[in-house]
Length: 235
Image 1 (tube, rainbow, N blue to C red):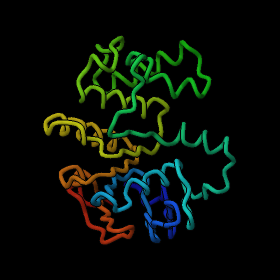
Image 2: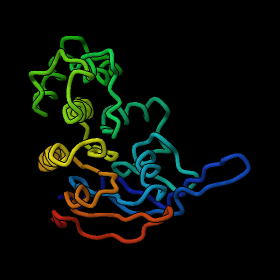
Image 3: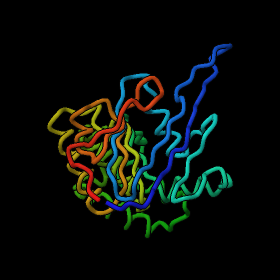
């Protein structure tokens, strides 16, 4: 694992207004994610972990504080540059898969490439390679409704990988899966991490968090403690 910094979170506060009431989801969170690291962010419901993931993935902005990716404050990015950053440098894997039901598996994985204006022929090749990497070469024409939950999560991972991002953010990646399938998905993340991807896991599961080198525990919008995960910290 490199000691270079992939993401730096600097005193991030996120306040939501619910009518006349202000709710602080994050209350001043600071830490660094090293390049090539697998990091887990744990916490119970309402701890702020999903809010933190959205801010780290540039899907939301902090009320105060900042996020730097590869040393550059994301506030410096124009809207178009920020969209390009999300599409090329960051891959997202969501608990609910977020697959388009009317598109087959191959077409779902091609979607991020369409946003980049990649040609149809090149899109197909890259999507096929991404699906092969997650063991789904034989499912290209199937609809999401025609495959299992574990296979749908593999499609979601392939879609996250298709632009070859350096950072993968996964929100409860095994939350909708049985334990055996969840283990297979986490082994896939472990392999991706060995290939150099920086992976951030947001989870309430200790078993999932143990795949990481470090575990950050959130409670009530603050970092409660940081500990080594099952992989240990490798310098």
